[in-house]
Image (tube, rainbow over all chains, first blue to last red; front, side):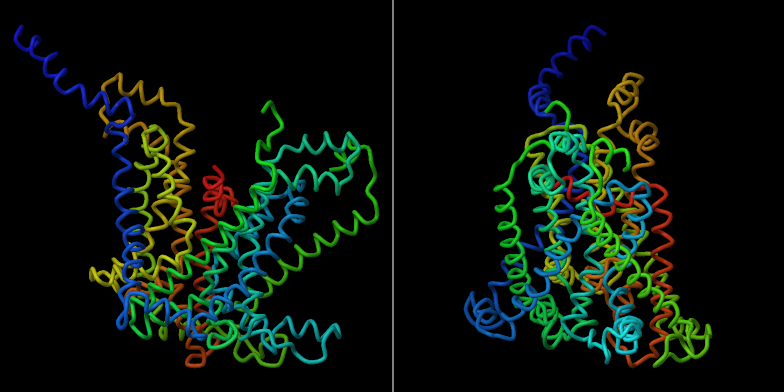
Length: 304
Length: 287
């Protein structure tokens, strides 16, 4: 009895130092719960990425830079960057720009949830279904061309599928809801009393937007632009199904897919994926650098 | 709205009204085009022959039977639900405990861990999908249903974590402290105290995972073999090889896909705000 009580403190003391030290840093049994997920993401996201990076420098033939040299010297390959940019940049800019006035209008709406629910449907259905639907709808005999001809706006059907226009329209149809819902969540986060204060002081709607809303939104819009851009930059199903995958809309993801699954050149495919990631990163960094030109701070109206 | 205009002490000008009308017109045109596109798919799937007219010449349901046979939709649907079920279950098992640790502890390197979970959500699946598929094929999992499940888990585990963190943070830690005082171990605490409290959040997160996984094209496309295609990938191949099968058959399959997705979306929307489907990653990114 006495022995055990005399023993206990001693063993605790022996065990305490590292436990206490770890506990001071809030590392204990609970913290370890994060480990399986961390190991999972490291094993199946970080490791494949690094593996792909190393693999891209081990080409099937030639020296370590052969894949990248091939990519940047073959117009069939390096033109895909331009083809993708030509789709992704305008589509993202259009979506972000239109989302701002619409979100400003919608935040005052009473039945906002109905509209957001409708707009979530295109996101949920995804690009494959939208591509299939648009093939009929935008086709020469589709409802859109028929309607335009009915009203005498055009005399012969427009060519809207299997070209640049088709992919662009699908990017707007599938991308706008995503961009809009992000913008809406940023705009609803801005306290309306800030604007009311400006209005009380006599600022016009334009001035309120320019001097109150835009600076507060700039941060969110930059992130929104980045998220929307990386989505559209990795366009794949609609570029194949709705575009001209051998011509105008041969985007970079098609080149990567062909290298991996048609030529079975995993090393080249990894190199193209790295180029894709690098271009996305470059645009994202540019956009995030741009946002720092604006005010950064609280968008709430309370005591800050 | 009227109150606010009064409060601001000014009338609406004509140009403001025109501007408002233009915005609503844009929204209406967008929704009308989307609805018309979806309607085209549904009508065509029931049409006998549709060419050079506003509507098909006649209506039939036989395309659904032929689509079911031609595309082996029975097998495809079973695969889809196996994949989705496994992804939902596993992302919950990996994600919820990790979210709990991140919500309750501030350990060194926590920001790094959060960034680690943010990356798979920010980087598009096409970019990391090809290296991931290469690794999975080397491990022998490529082309099997397990490869598809593992690949789909890469974005869903972080998604569950980022959705659950704020949900867990709002639960009072004193409840857990009370359970500890009465002698509950970590396991009992988790299953008898936390899981019931977290059930609404877990349900919402997992329903969102479910909807996202049914529609996840890229990762499944890169890792699936002939026997492990999900519905969305089968639909892609059908559209890609259009001309081999009747267009109405493909549209019948598209309708089955739409129904599968939208039923779960409707269930999900009973528990979550629609904006949650897109905004979670951004809120974390804004930090």
